[in-house]
Structure formats: structure tokens, C-alpha cells
Length: 566
View 1 (cartoon, one colour):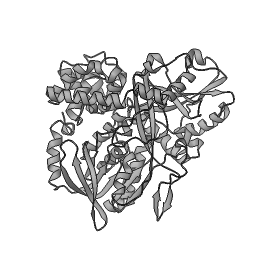
View 2 (spheres, rainbow, N blue to C red):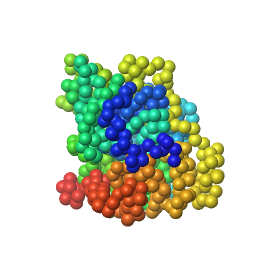
View 3 (tube, helix red, strand yellow):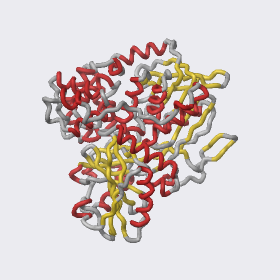
View 4 (cartoon, rainbow, N blue to C red):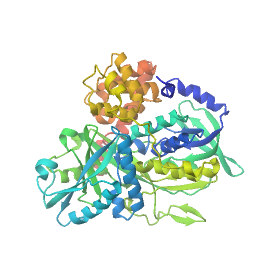
């Protein structure tokens, strides 16, 4: 195990927290927020040689960045609403990420049906996609009028169907993408902590000079100073800004999803269509061996201190959508294996200017689906805040934020250019991984190798070497593609503090297997006790905590709730 891989080991956090408390380090950049936006800024700042510290109040990717729709897309809808710049940036970033991270960001063909009397028709949609393909520098679109239900999309509703258009976007494991970006920031000298909360801003003559932090695992409090503080907390953006007297600007919108077994709703494509009730775009797509139905778009009024949860009304909405588009499927509540809900930190376009400060005007709100998704950046005397934007364009957002912070850091403008975050890893050319180490493991397919390298980069070599030396080998966990060796690796080098960190974000088996992977928890227990040094009492506490999280936030609402909302 290399030096950078030893970062986030079980003993690392306590030692580094004690060092941090001494206040001897002179930080250039202090980032709050361990989602994809904060991770992207962290990676860019570390790449530039800045001394950078990142803190996250929960786990890395705990918020929206583990509960998004998993799409790395150009945002076709943005073309339709005239947001050409955002669409162009998104398409180009999508292409770059697919090229740099095969196995983690993968192409996903989309199918869009065209029905009589519905907009858009095939001709108009083709013209829109022509712009989309031009931005990508490659033609993906194709129109089909025959063999749709029999060959392309089995079970699709064909009543009034004139044909389907195929186009392209991409899909990812969002939480693993965050971890991959953070790992590369670590390699360049950054320091990142989960479960370390920013509770207040520190000011000197009106200028923000640091943060008061609270360790969520021990309760200890201490201060940290930095040349500039960056607030990349997404739906929690207003919390820090309000310590400086700023108005709320975020309109949190919830998007929820259902997970069903793939055999109940099989599809090789992401099928995009409009809900029969409100004509909102929804989709059904394959992900990690299951099928996902999403998404809703509603004002989020649940407590920001807890994970967001799907409601009974949302469950009915999504099941109705899937059953209308696939009438033979006849999906019911019994088919739902898991759920997840994420909160989008959207800046309402009804925001007004008040005394030179943006303020959210809620008197005449737009429909949630009408809100634009561009990011916005504020500089409140040394507290740089960023909100909005898309997972796909996180690198561009990171550069924009650092440009805003450049005056505090003296960064030459020529260094703030888009570049790869990732070391070059070529699956075919990587003989050390694909030949020498795996010569005796012929059951590991090229796709499995690509998957590991996409998630772990060059560290996949260490992961596999460790598996070879142990009795674990390349054993998969139940019906998933996740290796038991990946759980062990996560415990060793990925700052796992709680069981949900391991099963919902480092791996996704808590979403992919029934009842939050209850059937394999005994096997997981052995891993946690050996590699995290959890005794029986600690394990029982973590098991109870985890199953409560699954019940409250990743399962169907209670029967009483479903009945009352239905």
C-alpha cells in the first residue's frame, strides 16, 4: 500500500484531527462540502499546489452526490429552453469523462418515443439532436419506426406510437465518482475529513478568515484559519451565508427514485418519456444490475438535518409513469426493492435584488421543473459560495470558483484551465493489472477490470494484489458486481466511519440488494470487525443505525403514509 493510499486508514483520522487542532498549518483554501462540487474544487486546488483542506459535516457524497439520477448528460432539455452554453459545456464534459473514466462513466443509449399529438415530433426532435451531436463531435441519433416493441424496447406502450429516436448520454456511480476525485486530490497533497462540521465563520475586520469546526464523532470544537473559505454545501449553502447576515437564495427541490429488480422491467436503454399526468419528463434506466425509475421534481420541505425520503405520492407518481409506458409490467409496491431521494440546490429565477444582495422571492414561485440549473457564485468578504449546476460540469464549476477566489490566492490566470483530474489509465495497455496480477484469475472479465480501474484508478492494482494474497480472491457479493475485496479496501483506505458509509456510498449494495443487503450483513460484519476493529457492541450499534437509515430513507414509506397520501 502506497503512502497516499494509507490516507483515510482507520487510524489516520484521529491523528490528523489532533494535528489540525494545534492550528500550526497555514491553509490556502478551506472547502466546506464533500459532494461533487466540493471534491472538484479540492482536486483543482491541490493540482495547483495550494495547501487545501476539505471538511464535510456528514460522509463524503452523503447528500445529493450519492442520491442523484446518476446521469452524466449534456442536458438535452437545456437546448429546448435556450441554455445553449450550459448544454455545450455539458456535452463536452460528458465526452471527456467517458474518455477518462471508462468503467465509471459509461455510455448509456436513450430511447425517446414519439406519439400522435405529442410534442416533440420526430422531425423537430431530430433537429434538436443534430445540435446535440454537433456539440459532441459525433453522430449518435437514429430514428426507428419498426421492431420497437419486439426488439428495441420490449413491452413499450405502442398505442399511437409513430417511432422512437435513439440518442446518447452517460451514466455513473455518483458516489464513487466523488471518491475518485477526492482520492486524486489526496495524492496531490490535499487533506479531507468527513464528519467534521463547519458551525460558524471566523471574521477579522469583517473579512472571513476561517471556520469554527465541530467533530461529529467526538463532539470536540476548534478553529481553523485560511486565506479563503469556499462554501460548496449545495442545499445547505444558505447556512454559512446566513452567519454573515445574507439572505436565503436556495430553493431546494427533491428528486426521488424507485429501484426494481431488472427482471421485472428489463431494458438495455434509458427510456425517456413524458408522464401522462403532468407531461414532465421521466425515465426508466438500467443501473448496476437493477432498473431505476425516476425522477420527481418537488419543493423539498423535509428537515435538512436528515436524509431526504420519498413520499407516498411520489411512489404512486413513479409507478404510474412506469406502468403507463410499460403496461404489461404491472409493477406494484411489492416490486420496489429500494428508493432514494436527492435534493437539488436550485437558485430560483424569481430571485430579486435587494440592497445589492440576491434574495429568494417565494411569492410567485415557478414550477420546480421550470427552474434553470446554472450555477451561481458569491463572494461575501472571503466566503466564496457556489450553488446550482450539474454533476456533469463539476470541473468547470470548480475552475469558476477558483477564478473567483484568485484575488485571495494570487493564482496566475493561465493555470485556471480545464484539465483532466485523473491519471491516464488504459485498460488494454495496463499489462501490470490485466496480465501479471490477474493471470490466475481468468474469471475476471475485461469489463470487470475496466469497472475496477474506473472506480479506483491505479489503486486498482493494489486492491487486486491484496485480494490475490488473501483468501477473498474475486468473490462477488450476492448478485452484484461488487467484489468482497472492494469492501475490504474501502475499510482500509476510504475513511469508513459508519456502516452506511460502506454499504450506501463506498459500495452500493445497500441499494441493490433486498432489505438494504440484510442477507449479507453477517459477511460484512466479519470485514468490519477485522479491518475497522469493531467489537460486537460497536457492530450491533452500527447495524441498528444502518437498518434504521434504510427503513427511514431508502425504503417505501409506511403503509399508513402510503394510504393517507394515496
